[in-house]
Image (cartoon, rainbow, N blue to C red; front, side, top):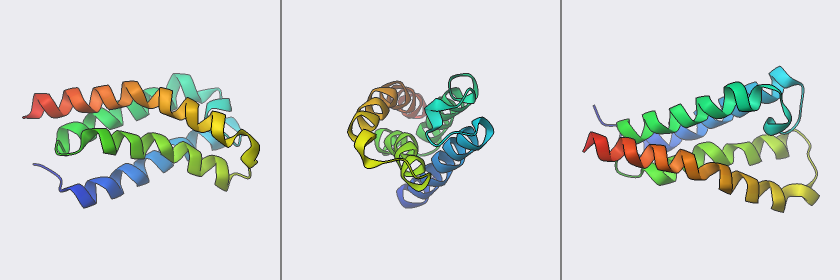
Length: 112
């Protein structure tokens, strides 16, 4: 079973928001990475989710991983974080996206 690109993007967005919202709520923080659950639960879950998306929607695995990971920025902004730290936050998200993109790409290649 392969998921078409548009539904896969919607799944990536919803899944990313769910992962990062859960990390923020469980940790009582505005930014997901300020939560104690981030490194032990949320980030590994996001990596696995990106790998699963890459396997199920192998046409655009890198884009799907970016959608999942950049959901953190949406949670930051919706949580009331100021715009002053947005540029370094986006840079951190980009760095954290690299392993997610790699796993999604590997899973997509394995699927093909």
